[in-house]
Length: 341
Image (tube, rainbow, N blue to C red; front, side, top):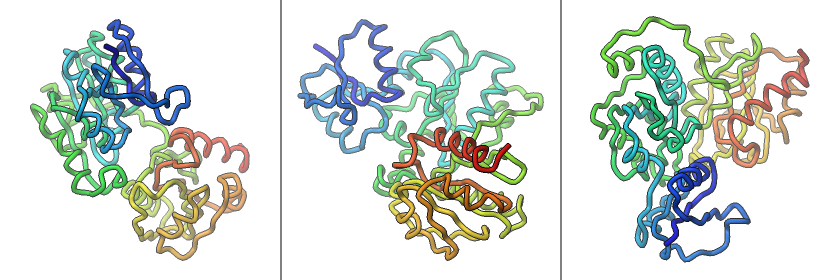
């Protein structure tokens, strides 16, 4: 009896590699990919290996007739490393990245999960520690928490179109606290000592791109800003960097994730909104000085002779880009093209 991979993105393809290694026969279903979107009788499959991004409704429906597994469930069951889970509305990738740099000083470490490296590719690869960035989608679908250490950094409204309410989003995030040991701390040096029992020497920690990254002395690329909470943090920092009212904020993305909630922005001298969702974003803003552009290039052409720019979209990419990485890279490219080297 065959198994089924449900969803064929990054996680789905890691399921494929895993099942091939296990000599397990499988089919693939993904409603968004024509080669794999044909109707199937899901009840006929022995197991369904489910990607985290499918809706809660689909997931619960599949569980009624099938054994449904996530990549996190499999990793918890099979992997022997010390498992450190990190989640939060913001700064979870940065915290994972910084903590991995510290722990890697003393022992071998995986940096896996929602940060972009599938957990299934790291099962029993010989490394002592696994630092796992966990999204609310992954935690929501996780059967049971087998983490050795669980870290919840912060919670603010996000992914409301998936969870349907802030209370359900919060409950999914808080599942990480069911680990053997749990913490709300964010300082990587504190976390290092908590986990290892040792003090770390101070390092010049590297940062991930597109997180309040100065690409020029007066231009900040904060493409990772995918929710209003991260946007407000970026504005707070920009108000300090640029001494308030002396910069332009550029926004874009799909506001449906936060159910088109009104946001009150204070600080920039003006706001530029571009892309396919520009009209939707404008309706969410209480700010008066807003200019709309169809694309990023046109936005930067308008700003060519102005000082100080904060690119902090405040929303996920939506129809404009595949992801925040593509968005951030495009911003850097167009700044060079429009404004020169």
